[in-house]
Length: 172
Image (tube, rainbow, N blue to C red; front, side, top):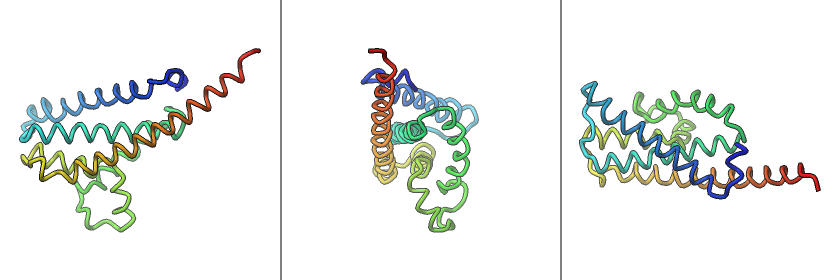
């Protein structure tokens, strides 16, 4: 974490690298992998690509916010793995979301998989138009912006704390 605090544009580079990696991964999963296993995929390429980009942005923003909130990447990966299965269930893709208790209904609104899975299934597998999945795209955009701003604010806070601590180490 110390290395990324030393440069002012490091947050953008860090964000972009994770976003590009995520896009390559989801491109493989929604493309070659789905075709290989005979799933319908890319039925509406424009809507699918827009939702993929927003979904990855929301996931990267969420992940960076978690890492900077903990000020370490040592435990954030384990935390995100532990919440990945419940987030798929909370999305409503495997279990009807209307059967969830009201606290779960609220929590699911703050998890990127809720609009991500529903929107991507509609666009990529059912050929839904971008106009018909606009609410999922808007939801993903709000999550990406909200978690992205939170991650950037935490990054600036951690960078300030680290640089102040580093100055106290220097010998006059």
